[in-house]
Image (cartoon, rainbow, N blue to C red; front, side, top):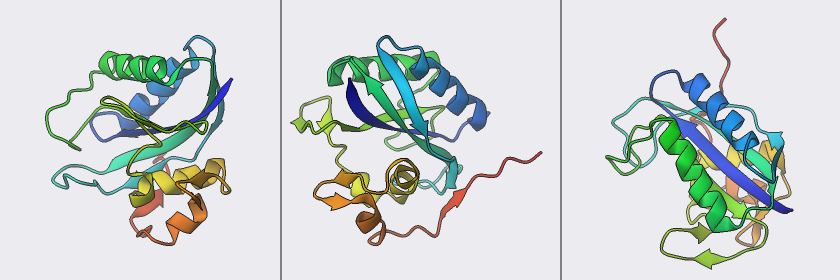
Amino acid sequence: MNNVYLSLGTNIGDREKYLNDAIDLISELENTKIVKISKVYETKPWGYTNQENFLNLCLKINTGLSPHELLNKCQEIEKILKRERIIRWGPRTIDIDILIYDDIICNGENLTLPHPRIQERAFVLVPLMDLNENLVVKNKRVKEWLKLVDVEEVKEYIRDE
């Protein structure tokens, strides 16, 4: 089984439901087990900023799927949850990114591992810290990368009851 870290984000509609539905669908993937789920964080949009805030979290999974099989399954889940790719980094019902897949380095047309912008994104680094503060990404620990980004706008999401 391979150790994989995924990032999930949503900023359209019932954001909590989209995250939960995505987690449920990931848990149903063949030969795949969710090991740990981070806290949920609310974050300002990144890249394309004229949109609503996101809810983000990260998952650690173990899977027997290959990187490209997993990518295809994640994209199928996005389609099931009505993801539309209209604006780069734009609004979405769900986004599932493969951040790290064991120690595999891949620079393919459809898949780059580790994800090329992990170290720039506080909304990824903060939930990754929940999963494994000693995780090494591109020759630095996650906690070292966190010192280089603005974490002020990444707030733990507290559900309104």
